[in-house]
Image (cartoon, rainbow, N blue to C red; front, side):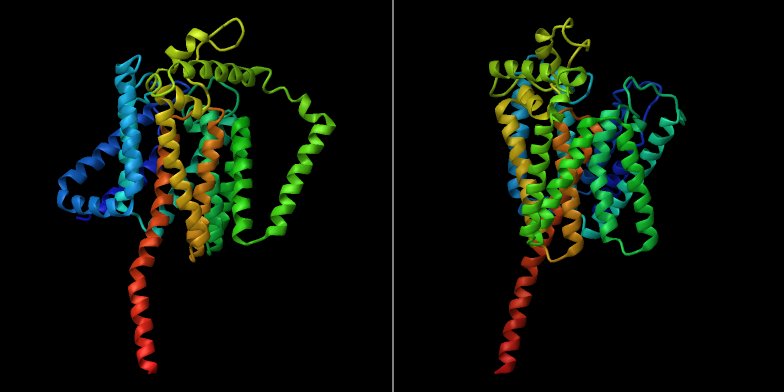
Length: 434
């Protein structure tokens, strides 16, 4: 029995089932039954690896040799999470998780999931297969979103905000999910050689864009646009299109100056009213709280206890707040400077691997897929500056990050293995000519 094939199947099932799974009998607009399904699949994976220990131990050795620095950074990060939980203002909640179920145990599951992706080291072919599965599921999610817009729902489920939510439970979560998979759809379209597949991918892309618009989530729109802009910059740098890159920056700068001089920007009041005003208030309160406990934070899932004392229900529209609606501020609140810095060091390593691979790889498919994955990750972080993550978004983040690292390191190792063969071939050719 090949453990890699079984684990690959389980990871694929996560990408397929998790976005669609929704327990309508017990959920509200913030859907968390996906958390239990995710934990169940990870536990099954861990149990299977345990019962194939001989092969598993060999996989660990190879993985350690390939991803040592990534391992060390994440071990340190998890250590900070443990310390933060021990000294949390509510250790029990920080360990098990509160209403959003994102405590220490859940983060342990995320890290195990990421390490499992590294352990099985899926090939380029298998990664592309997984991405096709992800894209196919996003088509179903988008279809449900369009049906929802026309008041057609295959299942009863309340949504307490404007915009469609599909099977993600809330428009902002659906928007964040879509901007992570949209670049993947574009990437698969670029590498596909079959007309039928490209036709299906084109329809999927249109459905995704329509539903992204129907979510009415400005943060997702902004994140998608900026992430595509960053991808375009990398593309032009790769092609050494310096003139086009300069023209792009001039166009962007000119557009910005025009908007300022025309007075259009002054008419935009998204930061003065509604959800924009709420976010400014939450960010200001979060900064005040962070200053009081900056090193290891207050503990996971404690934002409500920390932020509510600053809360003035007479000034803003919400009844409670349990997130700062900014990933960096939430990280600083819960795990302090140590947690936030160690996490973003890991993120920096992932992007470094991905960008290096994009510029150095000789394989066109690898370059396109790497760029698509990096674009999805960039969109996730940009959108996270105005919102927060739930289980489905965390799972996709760790999955995409794992794929980036495996793609990059896999080709590097292949090149190293081919080097002795190349040197031997060159030596043989030289001796033959003599």
